[in-house]
Length: 597
Image (cartoon, rainbow, N blue to C red):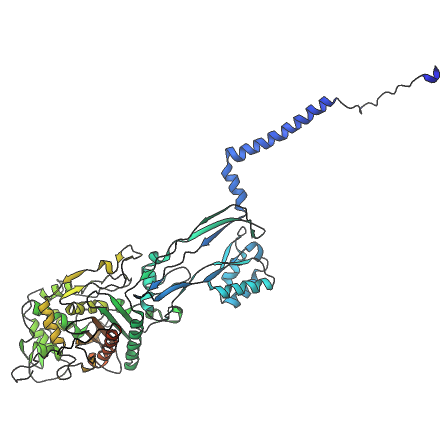
């Protein structure tokens, strides 16, 4: 039995395994605890404050990108571009990748693109949490792409490009004084500034998630598409504008003048076909021109108009029933009036001129004698209707209203001088539109530079859709004034034979005015010379006004401004296929008592 006796071993204390059921219960309890923690966290994230935690998770990797709207084109009346947008790119940096080599990369970009080194360095370093910074804006597409590729070849990471249209001015200086120009992010003059809201459109925005410097394809993303700006169509004729600019530039340079202006207006519609200023500038390189040359003198500069004003004075006098084109006047060499002596531009014995002769010879004295028959305040009322003393409101900023003395300032001495174009001031568009009223049968038609309708940045709708018409003088008064003005370019009777346009009847008036100097409060000995007229005289199609400021080499309204008028008018008539009327010009008598016609 001893051989069959079995030994029973006692288990070691502390190593006994528990019941399987106990182990399962413990496991389930641990799982339940973990799930409770996850559940509580889920409730916190999704139930209590889901947005702040979601935003915090995204913020570190979200990138916002502006999507530039394409600016609307500025076109001439025939659809030719005066300003448009071409392909450009912005260069963008991810500072997390460019910060390490920012000085070297900034130097490279500065040399390659001609941008400011300090600004590039600042953008490449960026804010501590920034992943998106503009380094350069509005760079030609090929230049920007090549620069980024070269940077990558040099081992610099973190640069990319985004679409960024560039403003371009195909004509360079053509209509630059009117069109204006853009800075990097703002409009800085002319139509670009006046119609900025209309042209600019509205930028869009894209937001996406980025990881390791790359966009995550399936990550969160939102896009608000840009709304492109509207096209602004002007009344300008690009070719006529370009020609007018060349002609006035030649006249100013030849006469050693300070500046010059030519305005071309459609007689019937009031549309401005050309508004040429000189000196001007290249809108693609505005920084190369003085600030004074980057605006439109035709609107901003005011001056005393001189004898062109006689057109308004005498048309009003005829309309008031005080005179006719054949009224006889005895005109002495000098006229003593109140505080001063009035002279003509040349010495002469006492002359027997008709009113037509007074116009043909541009007599200040004859004009004042005739205008004595105005009733008190009557001339001022007429000049107000002609549009003097108020802006033309064509939509461009910076227009000057000129100066028409108020009723309380108005007296006999001032009226005498205003009769022949001193002691008041105008801008060139005002004066063109006033003379155009005579061309248009006595009806003033408001000038326009915008075709259709467009809203300025100030919220004012302007354009040909808003044209107004107001009768200023009768058709008969306008007809008589036209016939008198025909005697001005007549080589037998007038002061401006060089203003003739071969084959056409031309009506016009010279102007030579002393210039007021604001520093001394006096006339400084310099002059404004001008010529305003229309053709064909008996069926007017265009009104043209040309002026030169301070021609130091000499020259008057007839000899200097007259040829400018003739060249520009001739070009306009040919360009628009306006045929001569084939009728004979006016032969109104200019003297009386000597049997002369």
